[in-house]
Length: 218
Image 1 (cartoon, rainbow, N blue to C red):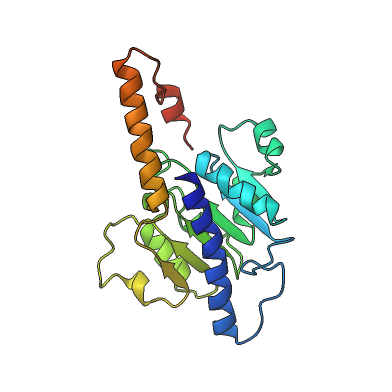
Image 2 (spheres, rainbow, N blue to C red):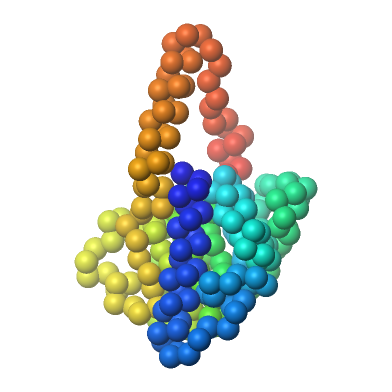
């Protein structure tokens, strides 16, 4: 799933660039939030799971400056990936803000009106993690201001109803929760299940998600 999610994140930035050019009828400056050339752009990642690390690797190769907000990741791990540890406010002030936190009772709707207000005009907000990380009413209100762009693959309400107001906004790109839905991902997932079942039946060790890992997927 990691490469597919990271690829959709990069595609989201390009899509936002095209919409910006269409809206402004001028060329997007190189290095800005949606430019094809990400050199010098600042990207804030909120969360540091496997998908975030895969996305960061692509961004670093594109010579973007990557800021990472995580409550649990070791700073040395972030730095080793070519990124920089940051506060939540610093990550939200980036040109591109991408969500990668796990969804828990504590992180549900953690991005509310106060946090969304910190997004600067022109910011691209990407959510390929969990829709419920963002307060839906606050998100709609912020997007209706028309000065930021959102690329959303997950929603607080799924499936997103046909009459949902998000569908009427020109500064929003919507995909139907397909970030991890590539044929390669499905094949890899099936192979992993078979491998683990076989290992279990043969008395081998099967990797599992620990209770500690579940608590720190944010």
